[in-house]
Image (spheres, rainbow, N blue to C red):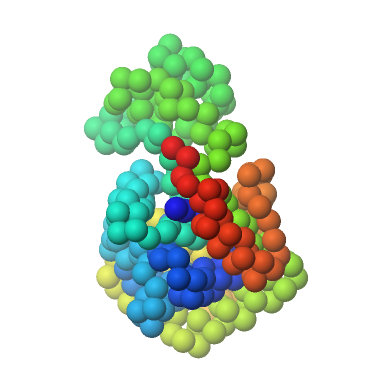
Length: 303
């Protein structure tokens, strides 16, 4: 059995999920669907569950790699599949929780994700100055993919060609992907709070993180080394600007709060496009709906 809880950051998803898993008696284990909680040491500003919470409830997909490492969507998808299979093998129920939309779609809809081909990518990167030639090559190999992107979109053209040449299959053969909402594989419950209250909660939460030692956490991560992706995490990126460039700390904190609010709105737009999400603004109602799904035929994963 499985169900998902989605929604913007700071909406209260984690608290709802934890309490339900702790008290329901349904053998719920939580799979965190978040692109930044996979990094060891990135704890406070990712709202990662505490050691005490992990002693009460079993969590998966946390602390998978060092902050200096890169981690792809396909790697996360594979880890999520393994974690879910383990939970089900032990007779438990899976509760997916998170706000990273692309990772969520990859896991919940079981996307066929193209692989990565570093040697091919290196060869294509060396030809960046001939974007017209690259686009013409893509048109010849995969006209369907070429028709869906601008001839000036360097990143997408190179990625599509990388997959075409590396896999020997058209990039377009990997499915309709993000545009397809027709199949419900895992039921999704969405928690969407009032945004005026959410904005206040975001600021309160970030300032509490600062009081709890977030700047020290970021400084320690900086010393260990952080990948480009890890350095771009909201909250970490802004405090790194203080440490790296000497920008005023309060200005960086204010910027982090602003960027978190913008992230919440982007997440609202992402999940709002999915007509399959069942929305509520009430944490208690979200918990009731999650529990009802897991106790009904709707909780079966439809592969």
